[in-house]
Length: 288
Image (cartoon, rainbow, N blue to C red; front, side):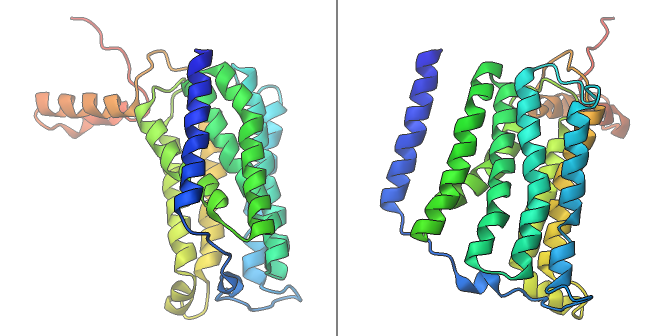
């Protein structure tokens, strides 16, 4: 098992090196700092882009408190507590770092926007490894994954190359939904992961359509402001999941759950009610 872990890390490192060799550098486009909504209210530059980060701070602090308040989330593994602690610290720090950046957008301040995001992204990957693959491997991976995120930011800042940061940001966007669907969960309410992923995807679309949305809304709200609000729903959904979930008595992946649902629908003549109970957990069928 230890050899497999070494091989896995070796393959990942070699793949990264090859990718860095065969792909061109990605410098930071300075137009990125030119946001659609630059209005100032109450003496706050870029007001809506600044204050729309407040939900990150609130949800991060709430999640962090619940992590330690009488074991409210009922963690069964020590690695889970460490992983979720890092995640909620990262979320709360996004609220501060992103607000700081949007007061005066530039590369130097952007570091403090992106750094806490990488903490949140990499923590989530570690949490998935802990809960769905192996507790020890996941716990041990927390520090290396966090370091990889920090190094990706430093590499961009010193070499003006976004490739490592792009990997840190977008690999979880692909890996997390896939793992949520394919790997058997340790807990119930796994579909909350997909809701969180969906809102994050929507946030990225709104970010790309910043100026278009600002025009569509007749200069009421920009895409980037909406991006903050949608992305802030990610920790909200994950906090709700942690509060509601229980140990899964029968560990079945969401993919198999959906297959069971479809089979039941076909057998029962496409009754809608026959597939609703299976989206969050699969109950053992009683023998006739």
